[in-house]
Image (cartoon, rainbow, N blue to C red; front, side):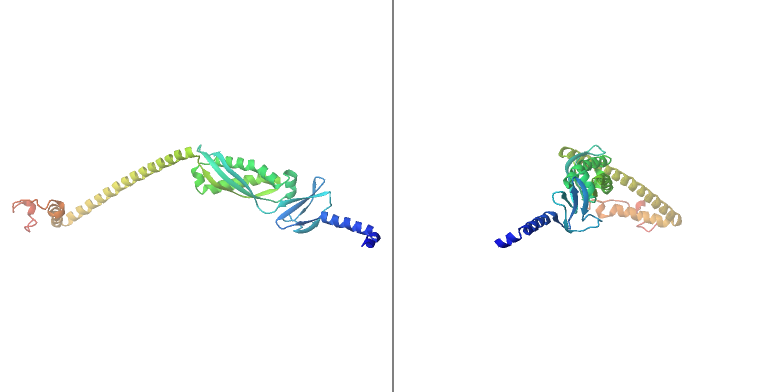
Amino acid sequence: MQRIWEDHKATLVVLGFVLVGLLMSAYVVPEEEQVVIVRTGEPVGVVNTPNGNTGAGLYFRVPFIDRVVRIEKRLLDLEMSDEEVLSNDQQRLLVNAYARFRITDPVTMVERAGSTDGVRNALQPILNSVLRQELGRRTFQSMLTAERGSALANVTANLDRQARQYGAEVVDVKITRTDLPDAPLQSAFRRMESDREREARTIRAQGGRDARIIRAEADAESARIYAEAFGKDAQFYDFYRAMQSYDATFAPENGDAESSIILSPDNEYLRQFRGRR
C-alpha cells in the first residue's frame, strides 16, 4: 500500500480533489421542490419550475460560486387569525381567514422576497388590507349568505394581483370564522330577535287582513246564492231557513238539557212542524 501511495501520490490527490469537487457540486432536486441557482447574488438558472424545460433529478453547480436556493413547489398557506374588521353596518367582526398560494416565478421571488417566508411576510398585510376593504363594503348578515362567495372571489383576485410582483399565484382565500365580539354579539342577537318579531307581526297582520277579505267575499257570495235561491223558490228558502233556526234552538249542544221552552201550538215559529206555510 505504501508503494502504491508513493508511486501514484499525485494521481490519488487529484482523484481526491475531483471526488470532493463532485460531492460539493452535485445536488438532487425532488419533485416537490424547484431550485434557483444564484451566482454572485444574481439568479443564473432554474430547475424543475412550473412549465420549465428541466425536471427533478441530479444536477451540478460550480462549488463555492453557485448557491442553490430550494423553493417549495406545492401549495403554501397564509393565515390571518382574530383580526378585527368593521363591516358596512358598523359591526366589529373577528375574522379568521387563510389563503393558499404557490410560487410560479421563483426568480422573481428570490429577487423580491428572498424566500417563501419573505413572500408570507409581504402578503400578510396585503391579505389583511383587502379583507378589510371588501368586508367594509358589506353587512354582517350578507356574509352569512351566498354573497360571501362573491366577496371572497374579489379578495382572491385583489390578493393575487399583489402577489404576482413576488412571483406567487394566489389559488383561493377562505374565511374560516366571522364572529362578533361577545358584547356586541348579544346586542346583535337582541336586534335580530326584535326584527324577526316585527316581521312576524307584519305577517300576522297581513294574514288577518286577507282572512277578513276572504270572509267578506264568502259572505257576499253566500248572500248572493241565498238571494238567487229565494228568487227561484221562496217556499223552499223559507223552509230551509226555518230548519236552520230549529237546529240552532233545539240542538242539545246549543243549551242546557234541563231548560225548556213553552210555546203555544199555534205559535208562528212552529208553523213548519204543522206542515203549513
